Image 1 (tube, rainbow, N blue to C red):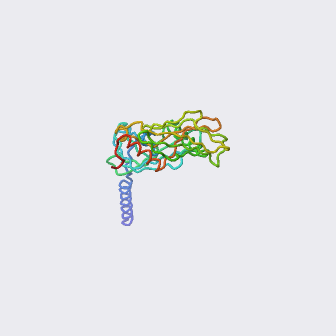
Image 2 (image 1 turned 135 degrees about the horizontal axis):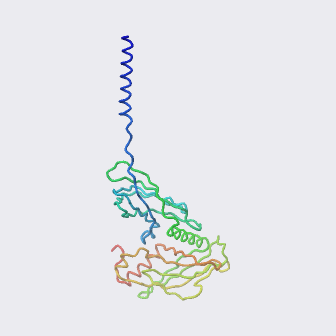
Image 3 (image 1 turned 60 degrees about the vertical axis):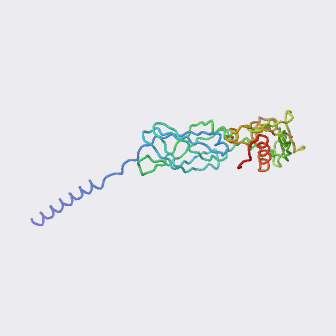
Length: 288
């Protein structure tokens, strides 16, 4: 009987211990705070120059959220890259932009559905969360960037552009030439140059014709002489211009639609243009 009572007492103690362990050891970690984030893709003038997208992040929750990393997932582009940041998103839908490189678009009809993944932490919390956010789809901006890159690549496969030698004309500006050359890999029989534009700083003067220039297998090189002179000389323009050496052209291949690209500008080209511009505008040399 004594042994039986000892066994019963031991069993009761073990049951009590098991109950205590179950109550104490079954606690769960606090759930992660719910994040209410959304994203859109934007692009400002300075982003165009750097080939970046502004990922506009919106916090629709009621607590501030810290963003430490933004990872774009753009299936129609190659070479997009993440960006580390320390961005604080205020609550109630206020927006903060984080810029990321978007790479180079391929030649497809429209951009596929695209996303960004953000590493986020609610202010006051220590844990971070990875949140995948869909960008609006269809996306007009991504479609435009895709079309621009495809057009530029199509043109590059057919013709190259470069500036020829420069001649200083003093107060009249600087004389140059646009050299258009058919590539060895070109499949189009004819490439025609339709427009050649200056920009916010430079005015281009040349003899108008339709087309401005044409290259074929029989005549693979064409030259368009022009004179560049200042378009604006105010200091505000010098301070704010984002693309001082961008010169757009439009080209058609075998009579097709006009495709947009820009003329590559090397350091000698920049020096000739900038020296003339600053001298004729009375603006000190850059860096002085």
